[in-house]
Amino acid sequence: MMVNGRKRGMGMKTRIFLAAALLACGPAAAADLPAPGFHHLMLNTVDPDAAIAYYTKAFPDTKRTTWEGYPALSSPNNVLLLFNKVAMPPVADSQITAYWHFGWNAVDERAKVGTLLSQEFKFAPLWTGIGEGAVTISSDSYPGLGGVYGNGETREQMADAQAKGVKPLGGAGFAYLSGPDNALIEVAGNNNQERMNHIHMWEDEPFCAQLWYRTHLNANVAQRLAAPGAPPAPVYTEANCHVDRGVATWPSLTKEGMYRYPTTGVLFGDVAMNWYMDQTDKPLVGTRGHLMDNVGLSVSDLDAWVAKLKAEKVTFLRQPFKIGGTRAVMIEGPSHEAIELVEVK
Image (cartoon, rainbow, N blue to C red; front, side, top):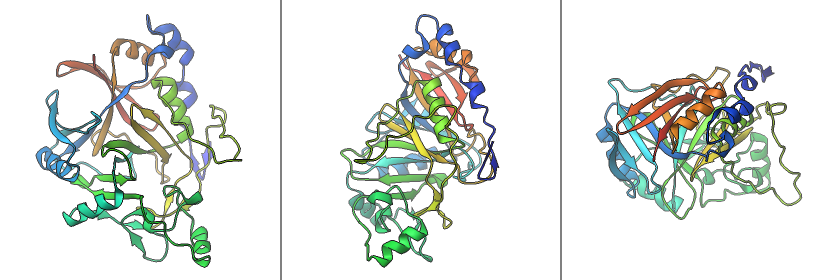
């Protein structure tokens, strides 16, 4: 299939075998396995101690810890960042794998960014799309579609806003810390707790990817309220999940703008994995060995999950293996993202 000049060949249909899984999971039918929790994000780094010192200073509610031999950082919601020491700086190009960046809730966006700037933390510029203009917090640019700061605007919409005298909204928004090993860490919104709350990703086909995560990992889907009078959101299936990439919008980490549509995602516990369509015409590559190496999900019955996933012909990157005092497997997601399932009793 050709989408915006790009050949899409994910073979999604050949990888979704839910009926087979229902027969193969033994005592726990596949559909009855509870959705995994979000366990960890694994980061490759040349200096785990320096990286952890950075995060504990930037986010004082976090705590240094260890997990099964890995230096680690614990977020207040019991989500872990694991640090794998490597000899050479990991590739951190945010356009070439499915894992784009990870993000923290802020209690007060403006106050948090102000504090971090006063401590000499560095932020990546958000280009506004208006000349060489850039801001640190997205809401200092023009409001997104429908006044929602994450939606972005086209150049034509911004020109119309300027002509009408529309001003930036200010207040909550998002900003991007430039972290250790060239990590991008989003600081976003006004929330009731400062904590790690999302992984932002690229997917070759976001709505097809959502089907994959729902089918194979029993993932939960965030419910979004439609605007009054708006038509109901489409129900996506294998027949209609291939959706063309939209137009570029701003603010953006690149001067060329960002493709924000199509977008969707899933939830594991209180951590969202949110997706946009990949931004370039190049196929996404596997995440192993890159800065953001893998995402870990916690399950209580690893054997049942292994039986389910094997019955569904999911690609295994690692067969069951010991990791400290527990066991894990590693599978490959629809855009070559590494996903580790960790047994947590």
